[in-house]
Length: 506
Image (cartoon, rainbow, N blue to C red; front, side, top):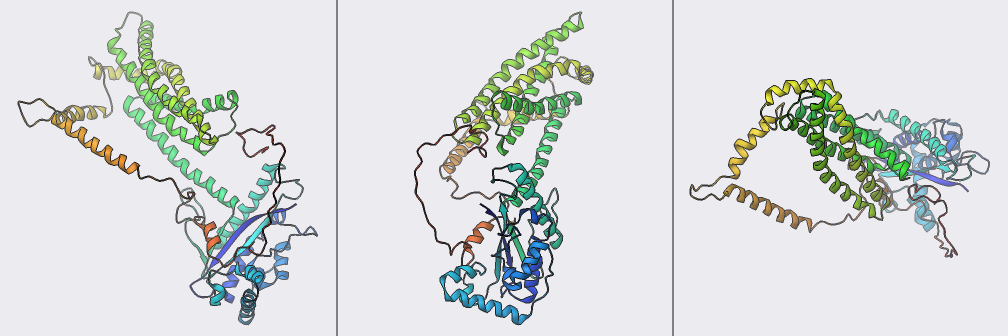
């Protein structure tokens, strides 16, 4: 049995009547973009003769005729000529008369008219419901070779999308979506949405968001370079941080046998960037502290080994506590009944642990082998000799701020006889008041009452399904009667079902 994969298309004119010869010609050209691609023949709904069926809910077919539409649908032929005014008005009057005659005809023609259009005898907007068939020809069901079927559908909708972009003179770039600006031509505004085009747009948005991920990586690399003063160490640290993701993915999928990896899991990149940079700072400062706390001996290799063990021991103890608490916090999400949240908690906890292990194994090796780092260290030793801790590349300005400004403010007291730090007490009271205020506001937070939109308010897809439901006289299926069947199931099993692959073997 064939099912329909539906696409709503909406045409909006000025406040007056949209059904004029000029606007209908524009509507015809817009809708023809869905039938003219050669890929349409691979996905169209088939009639009993095995040919592409004429769309029954096309507004173009109502005015241009089903025979004309059949040539466009089956052969891609037919030009959108301008109709005669008398012919357009006659068709419109017949639609209004039929809609006022019976409830069935009201449902049939009301789907083409906005709310109140039948009573007013005019409508400023209209729509079509276009469909492609599923499963495709040669496939037993929608679950038969799903990837191949989706690839065929995607090729068709990509062709339709390009036709429409060329028709309206818009384009989607890496920084700007083509769907953010209204699509208008000849006084008619065009909107449409189908789930495959929506998925394509979401993929493009993810590509745009990946730019922010790249900027974050560059920014963290710059901070590591600024703090350490070593480009070699910054490169090694960033390599170790980024390698934590694929190393964790290997354990996550191969050892734990968890196949699911969703968009939420990508947030672990930002998590490991922050934690990984912090762990590298701890190790680097411990290595630098070893120059003072571990005296040199005659054998340079022995000196390096002692200082490395010193830095390793300090880092292992300090970072272990922070990594353990962070990993356990995310691991608590592993008890969630929501599978994407549960798997993200497991993956994030594993990322933290993997980063901890790699910081203690990979980075010490790089610290010894990186000649650039050793050259920097010999240069920095002259500036930091005799100090237990030191900083480079602008960090002393931060130290001087805390020593000269912050401590004086915190220890401020107007009385010379009283040693109570008034500044520190005032700071604590301010933060306490802020905590009370924010806690009060948190008590008034509410759960979302409707599904969040994936797109911005200016995007073509935002609110489109709701508009199709609320803004028209009738729904496409309004003249069908709903029949409910109740039946029982003796036994229900989940043989070979994997909860981490929810789309298969349900």
